[in-house]
Length: 263
Image (cartoon, rainbow, N blue to C red; front, top):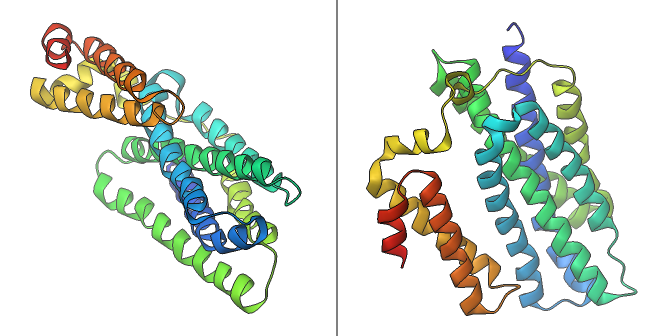
């Protein structure tokens, strides 16, 4: 292709932006607590939205990457990264309940974008460098801790030493976000190996065997059941979770046996 290194460093910068944003957000929880009067439980829920969003992003991104292609998912992640900042900045001390919703959804959207980027960057780099995957994946994965370190240091200086407002601190993750957007702009993306070979999701999961497939479906059922319980009564949420797990099992070709196990 000729642009392998550029795509590698674009992916590196994208995950770096995610790390910077994650670290800065973690450092301004005390600002949110004092400015809006949130309890520890409310702050924990805001932080939890970040982990939930990441899970949804990486699972959904991984499932649709072969169908949609890497380029469309990068665009989606970039838009969501910018959108998350706009949503978070909408929080106002004038309305505590509205501010809480803005911060929860801002965190969720940001983390969802992070998950989508992870779902893209890893297979993208593996596809670009089939003969030396471990080396280049190690380079890619160094971006997350580097972003965490940079974000932590910047947040510590701006918050503890300079008393800069939290919105200015948070906006700094948009700098590497714009950089990775520019680096990906106009670049030709390779097809995933599965797309090249015409493999379905079921074909890929068959490599892990029936037991592995059953475990994956069961864990997905628990994940969706617990997540949906936040907005749906517990019993109904669990049933929906198992339904989702059963549908996934059927799509993977384990239908009758695994669905029987769920029942």
